[in-house]
Length: 119
Image (cartoon, rainbow, N blue to C red; front, side):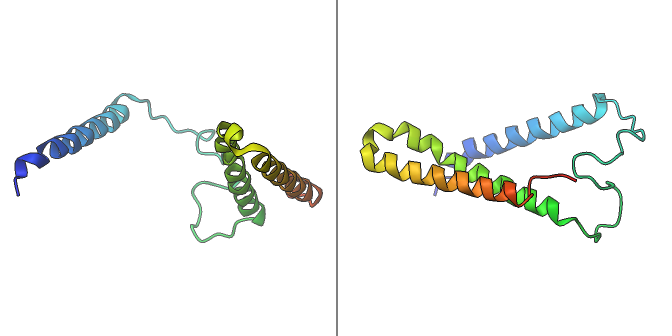
């Protein structure tokens, strides 16, 4: 076993680590750090950033996260289907129409249940 064959991998790891550490270090040295009440206020998540880690969350946060992942993954199926549409033929087209209808019914259902309302 010749260790000289692994030198490019070691070099790649060292250069990558050096660039990563240099970027983080340079950013922390150059970037302004002036936290104020506006910067420390709740942002997007709706709760205070510096509280007890064991506090309870509203179920809506989990629901929105699950719905985002669900619909994000479903829409990811559109890209390979669109690329291979000619090869799939009528069967592939009908299958995707059924998928889109199921997608639309699911979206309509969660909309009517009020899962997307923020009150």
